[in-house]
Length: 243
Image (cartoon, rainbow, N blue to C red):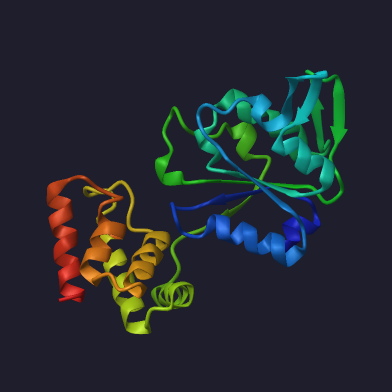
């Protein structure tokens, strides 16, 4: 990533939900000493939400920069989280910023912004949720360097959970084992497995005195499935480790 930043290459992070993509970007921005502007993309987001719009106030009209424009002006890292959630006609506005031009045209304002020398664009998405309606165009994908993410190795994931929440190592290891069992069900009743984030949620509740099985059901089972059979399977797994 640092080599990509040194060359001001736009970076694409790919990986399952809750595996640490956003935390990684936050860490790298802190490590590089650069401001970070994060945008949570959604299907209702328009190009104006990214670049800016004219607003009415008591003195007339004024231009309000969007987060992408602000980042380009200031030299921040702009992170577009879950970019496939945005409409394709919205995401094309990033194209001029992701090639040799490094510019952002503000058509409504009649201004062409040349990105600050420190500006970088980072996007993320979950390849597991791709379909014909929600995917990036090749013309967008091929403007980025890519980094693939996955859940950490079991021993690393347990250390992360313990450090983030203060639970003991044995409890953290049990939560990871439950999560790994659930991840094996992906494509067999589950669209997505239990993420590191959900393990941390469960551990935080356990650290506050919630009974472990109840914490696991609340934080690790309820969010990912409503299927009664899958829930029973996961409940049995939880009971195996927290009996």
